[in-house]
Amino acid sequence: MDRSALRRYYDHHATVYDRWMVSYDRVMLGDLRRRLCALARGRTLELAVGTGLNLSGYPSGTPLVGLDYSRRMLEVARRRVQGIEVAMALIEGDAAALPFPDATFDTVVTTLFLSTAPDPAASVAEMSRVLRPGGSLLVFDHGRSHLVGVRFLERVVGRLLRGRTGLDLNRAPIQYLDRCQLRIDQVEWSRLGIIHTMVCQKAQ
Image (cartoon, rainbow, N blue to C red; front, side):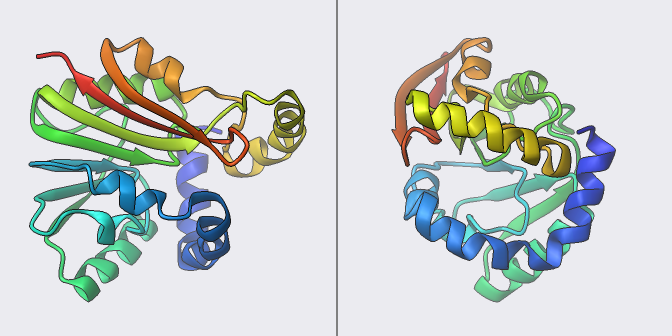
């Protein structure tokens, strides 16, 4: 699915997205949003911030910038920011062409994005570019399971989801990180290998 189609999809479903995610987060993610975002340090960029479901997980006082290509999702995120009194600048933009200079952020966070990104390799390259040397890239996403039976189901379900939502369950997010010369410090597979969590560092 191309960028314009994805934007239309998320714009159309922005008002119901949070309701969809209540059960999904409970079953598939648990406290993963909080655990990953708690690792953020310094000026932090969240890519594909969506409706802002990660916001409450960041350490208090973290300077935050959120970017998404769905204007409607950002409208929901703005209401969430006001409700919890978090200081976060929200910007409409493309993760594959970030509007920031090199080495701008100490931490970049992205969750459940690389599995839908139209150009995941370009997006990760941009994440690496805007990270300062020694900065952290924090990721969790859907990915190809290491279990053969689960991988078969991902292929079957993936064919149904890919055309409708852009979600590709057969990607391996770590492959995009490997190409950008980021040091991968931690990898975790959960929920039968479907959820991939990675903590990376940019070379000094």
